[in-house]
Length: 265
Ligand code: MLT
Image (tube, rainbow, N blue to C red; front, side, top):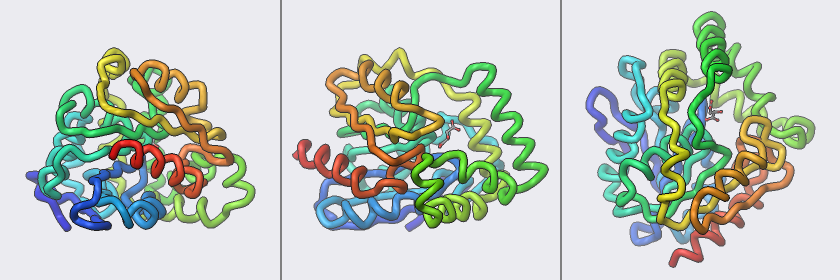
């Protein structure tokens, strides 16, 4: 299904019964809805699971490549409206978590419950901004393939790197097939995002915070801090998994997600 987002169309995949609990999955950078394949399968029997491609990535339109986090939140709202979802559970990983955190601050009435995976509320500091400038240069000079070669093995945990070559290959492939203009646009949107830390104490919906024990980018200490700041949030640390926690250890991730969703009904 496609949703009209003004200058682009957003690609949406929907699985599960129409009357199931709606769950929207927002992917990280620079991935696509395909990173949610295990969850689209596992949760679909009881839930209405919706995964979409953030603009510029996957099979969504690219447009002008000039994106902001606000535009990404606008797109999330368009997805909810386009798929006819009334207050779904929203689950975001890393960049998807940035989108969700800002949506919780800006559009709190649109979200029934939140799942924040391998993400953080802090905005980029100077070191982070310079890292993004280097990433943009790599993307422009070497293309998606060069970026994928460096990023895919670095983003997963050591267990995945050593024992799950197929997961590393799938991550690499997802990155390689993304358009450079869309990836650069997402980097600029992340670079310019606001700090949502001040809004965490005001989150009123049930929240699950999930992290990979071997995540090199948002380590367990970051996830613990995030969970501590959100009233009543539950923290789940997944063993033998890095930043792409849901793909690296899908069984453990799905168990935590299913338990959290069951507790909502
Ligand atoms: C992601 O996985 O979405 C990225 O690591 C987020 C970021 O670049 O800050």
